Length: 157
Image (tube, rainbow, N blue to C red):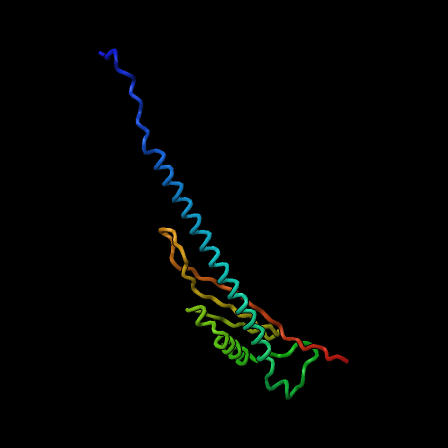
C-alpha cells in the first residue's frame, strides 16, 4: 500500500548530458583529424605536381639535344626525343632538386611518347598523416603527373 506522504519518484537523468558532450567531442575530434589529414595530402600533392612538371620540362628539354639534332638538324615541327637521355635528365633533376630528401620513399616513372614527342613524369610518395583516426591507416600514398612537349620556337626574323 502506498504511503500518503510519499512523492512520486523521478527518474535520475544525471550523466546523460555528459555522455552527449563526450560523443560530440569525439565527432569533432574526428572531423578535425580528417580536415588536417586532407590538407596535408593536398599540400604534398601540390608539391609533387610542381616537381613532376619541372622534371618533365627538364627531361623534354635535355632529352631533345641528342645526336640527331647535330646530324639531321632541327625538324620543322617537334624535336625528337631520346628516351635514355630523357630518363637520365629526369633522374638528375629529381636528385638536384632534393626531391628524395623532401619526399622520402619517392618513386617515379617516365613515359616517352616518340610519336607525340612528349614526356610524362609520374611521381608517388608516401605521406605520414599528421593525425589519424582510430582504425584508419597512418600513411597514404600521394601522386602527381607532369607532362611536356618539345617544340622548337620560330626564330625572330
